[in-house]
Length: 303
Image (spheres, helix red, strand yellow):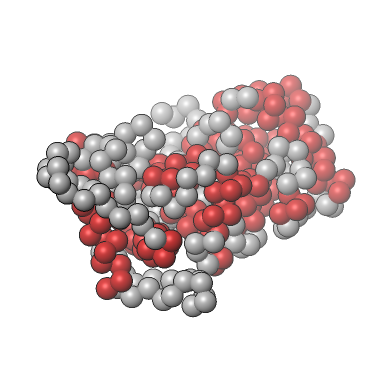
């Protein structure tokens, strides 16, 4: 993996002092110590000291810089051409993969390219189009409702404010932050299952509630980092730090991870667990960005 470079430290000096490279050494040493096999330390060895808030913030920001080196091409993994398509795709992504959404939306947007078109759709016809994404009846109800709201309350345009977006049927803070960050350039933190799992493994927080997780992480990083941080963490969760069996032995930020060893630590075995472009396989987008190093995903029914 590429080596890390010094990045932005973010918060003002009143709350978090500037991070010097030497100041991070204790965090690296402590995290690296987690790699020692069970039983390798003597019974009389002292338990590691609790990490201070300042040390955690420094470690978290270094993780972000490392991930920026590993995933310089991190991006939203839903195909979209405008805010409306991103909003619809994000609603459809609940309880399914981005790949399945991307394979489904071409036909959906061909049939209903605008909120006005979608609001006038026959429910049963829309259900058949989005059936592959699962929960298609509930999702159809949400799409019909949000499309009608966009038509009637926002002139057929997706609003660029969180307080307006979360009023739309089927749209919560996570969906709103995805749309704001990627369609409007408004910084936001996307707390999906991957993001929540990783920030708890990295001990940035022990909160389970997504709103509380968002608030905690927002206090660690400058606002300018929020959107890209979300992409990097989610990319890492999908490719390396899996829920059931993390690929610890192939993880580029292992020395910074206090949970090292929860997954496969053998490098060769861990490499076999890598997914998408990290494992030499297609990604989730049928139309990925030009700088994406992996292969485009196949269309629905092609494999």
